[in-house]
Length: 216
View: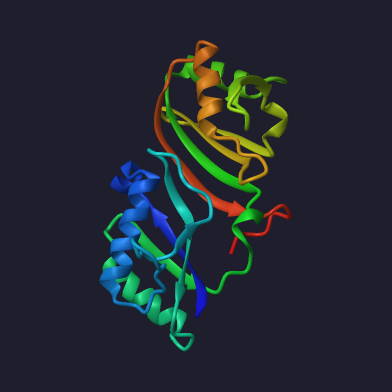
């Protein structure tokens, strides 16, 4: 028995699938493929699958990971990839099947691309806000307490690009079990500062470890 990692994209209409529903979908997909997947034992057997970093509802992802176990060690990764591509729905695209290199707990950063629609004045206001020295947000800590924290220093990289109808914002944020900053916190803080805009899309582009190696 071996563990393999599916690298996939979740875009378009699939962004409206919650993480719980995505888990159920992948269970059905694996069953449909008839691959020799390892199932848990007990009253309710199911394929043992784990996800590197669950994605928020409404977000798209161009790089996501799911691990599962295969009973046949001789089955090649490229064979499994072709079978999975035929079984997955159109908006979830299998990119690779690989042997895992890193553990899920080693995810440390996530790259995001945000597309915002706003007028020219708001774009300037947003840019000034995002470049300010402090960005205060309210966040629930591990004790379920709501605390105020400054996330400006936690943003590893930020690029603000004007577009014809708003802004494109590229972010590198802490992600994973140690610390996780959701871009929704940044957007909420911008709205609370008086900026009025529409969020066209939030896309998670890539996952990295603490040394900025691509998570694989």
